[in-house]
Length: 383
Image (tube, rainbow, N blue to C red):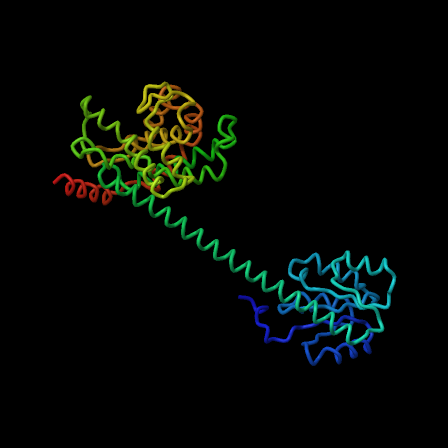
């Protein structure tokens, strides 16, 4: 916590006056209770106030050569580092307009000369107490804000770890590697950020939603944990009955996430998109996909973004049983699916971002070690 919470320290009072006798008088009056600093002009007063250890209160004369007290007050109140220092004007000016001007500039009080010592001491004590309380509350608020930020970061980290753990669980039983999760996350983010100004998508793709899509994307294939190994790990084409079983991974994924949310007892932002992606990323723009046969805009935007990301990555990725397709050929296949498999505007975004997709693919490419580890894992699972 800040030093302002240490009430054993003497508060510092800065006295500003161009008359030596007044500086001597005020110093003598205050020195037993406070640490006193003096300045005989406005420029010096500003320098002291802006130093590493600023005063706790300023007693400021108005009529001075050079900068007037009003000007000094105005400068200090505009500076975030000094604006909270209470200023009491000490002046022989007694007109109501003078006092009004001083208070409007931010002074907390107005004492007329010649000063009455008990009045000066009482008002200095009062305003220092008010400042000490304000400093205490400021420090408490700062501490609480830091604690809230810390707890928020911890909760976000727990969420991220949970998501990646769940996604990795699905990945251990699939032909995909962990890099597939990273790549598809970044593909989705690229598409979403590109389309956030598009007329069809701007009302949906704000910064918060894009962050939630990035967070939830790894769960798109979580339902594969419920598919039998003999089907999930089959390297060739599925028989019709096998494909019907494979298609259930969308519902299994959505239901698993919904069950987790139900157990939690509250709705979670990113899980909404995780459910959409898990359930609908195999839908096709022309209605020939699964599990619902949704078409066009009836398919959630989150799932439409994932569809492009997932298919592109499936095409270019190396697997235990196949080599990856060249980037240019994968781009051609995505292009052919414009308006049939994929939302046309999302394909157009993909084409504009094709080089960046390739960069992501290269950055998170599967190494020989990744594939060897995956082969060993699958061998362990299948016996």
